[in-house]
Length: 353
Image (tube, rainbow, N blue to C red; front, side, top):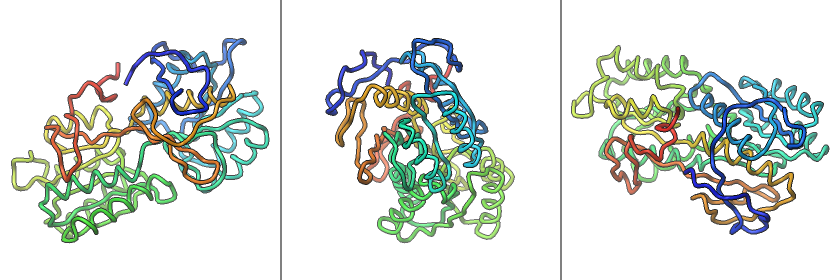
């Protein structure tokens, strides 16, 4: 995941996509007048996943020779809009953002397009509007992998709770729809309790507790993000269900992010699996594509040389779908889905300094 090459001189075809190495220390200011100035809006800083993304971003900016200005919209699209105005006034030549409300960001994208400021969105894809590139993993695959793992572990029967994210987000919708579609198609005898949480850990814990009280025979939980990890473990512990997978009372838990705490919890038998969302590669390729846009490069749908696929979502909108593996304790295959072991050194969650 950290192959080192030089930046390609042209990228009109996918064969010119190259990997860039990660190094350097954090520098969030535009201190070098000779380097292009770009802006990055962090969507939030209250989760381990996004704090990891925040850590990686200045490292890759330095590697790419970019000066960096940053803001934090704190999961508020109004703040994101205001932050975009600040970036415009600062003269940024490109902007990376991760809008959590993927519908409401359209007017801001239109304004940036009118000012010829290229935009890369990270982790989320706008419902409408144009950006130079979307950098995210296949979020439908997240839901499918969680479904196949739980379906296999439960033998195709039983009850599971899905702690959904925000359904105003394309990520919440993709993960929810894919999990439900997979269960309906492959495991029709598994009943799914879908709980909207708005990416709020306290809400998730409260709804999980209510479901377990009403249905003590629930045997699986799919958390659409690690935001729900601490609360889920607390609820299971309170109910005497936080036991190893060899115990008949064990509730199988699948998470989604790949943060160090998830990997540790898998190794300890507290949860069973996660899907590793690549925080490092989100930072890397957000800035890579911003630089490419400023250099006048273009891209086409197809396979890349960094284990991903660029797809055309709609006319004028491309998405680089980065790899996001299933992670388990044993590295086995579940429901036809292969996994990596939780201590695999290729996982970014095992490489945070």
